[in-house]
Length: 367
Image 1: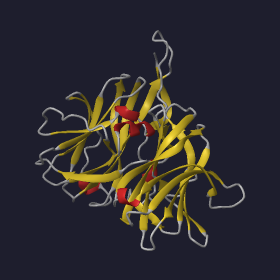
Image 2 (image 1 turned 60 degrees about the vertical axis):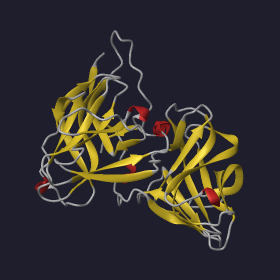
Image 3 (image 1 turned 60 degrees about the horizontal axis):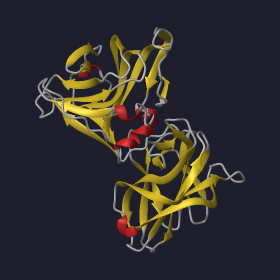
């Protein structure tokens, strides 16, 4: 085994939908009545394989709906005759429905398809949401993620006219497959909620961490995280752990007087002294306030732990806390802080170990 230096950094990235965005992680696209929302993207899964999709998950906001109304989610081919903006071609390939009586505001919902849909890795298609049975007063807000312009995944609103208007937001969609794995559209962040927690040196939990492991030997050099600070004295440390042993401390210690704005979420970049990591070993990076002034760590949830198969790091990353340098809590497997890890060296796969299996988790070059 040999660690080879990279020309730059490799980033295991959970922040892509936030980059250049408003950071309002769950934002409304539009309402549904006699209208439709088309979510366009390319199918991605951790195995880079053809999968049989059996269930579609999506995130809804504020809802006013009659119990007897019916919401349909369908898979359609992307129209080759119309656009831009891209849209489904109007021909349902597979679909599932959910009754208005089963819907409520601000949550992740799913439909089971009548028959499975065979999706080739990297293939483009549309997921279309519409009310097939409705009352005139029905209104459903379909949520998207952030406010970005991306060709990798986007949403199109179809009015009753019909007129098609693109929404420069990232779809929130999960695909459950018949082998138990989950996929999504490429470069999207399929989460059920995005939340922040404010805490300080006197809080019941005064340290919040991302627990993680890596599938290959590598050298960690830093991270990026979505955080906010409450004021000029809200200083904090960032630490890398193996168990409760500190392996490295972020450079520099974050002095809140040096940041460009407080009380507003920003992506913070932290450097570590280069530290070698072992494949399959559990580590943690934590955020530790050093004063009684609060910082806020942002985190996202998914409806089931296996849904993290559609995220970088897959199911080996989670959320945990501790207080006063004591024992770590158990890991919340359906939650993780909004953190990307940066690596400066990776295993080249040579040597007596016979190489290393590298996860297809969503890894991309650092910014």
